Image (cartoon, rainbow, N blue to C red; front, top):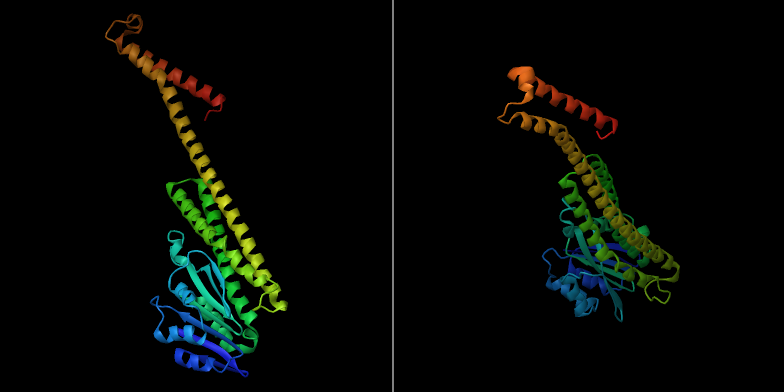
Length: 330
């Protein structure tokens, strides 16, 4: 699906047909944004003709839009710049299947035009497009403004994901300290996978944005360089935040292991105390369980000897309980 918004001699037009967009582009619009959603991962013949014939994009750049680029990419051509960046659009169960939440946005930027190509429906692009339709004088005042808005939304998607991770880590920290369970470790490892996936695409992303901060850039006016330096700073801060979250997860794993060890120690301590208290019972019962006549039989008789044995067991148990209590072993 293709849609476009462009301004010709101050008149803003919305178009959804590739052939008419190609015809209008011959009129040299002041500024144009064409967005292509590859619903079936393929370009139609009309869309291919628009990109190759009207915009004169290199066939390798067009091919890169059809196949996923697992790392950010930036290539400079004679009349345009092609780039591939990655963002995050969270989906259900994203902690378990985070890879499905990562999207790729391909873009072509030249004098007076931006062409965005993506295989997933990106809601933030839809929002920006509707804003451009509603307020063209503000949103389409310059190419740099439109490009900055797109980049800003992509970078902000990482910050939103980090907020979700912070909330989950805070929840898990409380659960781990209160009563660590196996499910907690599974959730922690899922978060670790999410952070690893973010780090894999975010670390090299900064180089793509840095291209637009160059003073000798032919596409970005000098007065707009500060906006793209801001994007570059956001990206650098985001990378630092991802590294910090990774350290937090490692610390949380250590807390979990310590909590489990403390819990296990308490259980072993309880079982040891019980076994130690019952030890006199085993010794006394083993002694009086032998088939011989003990001197106690002559003193207490057979029935009295049983009472004497029970009393000895009880005295030993109470004495050990008092001793353990004074030692504060429980």
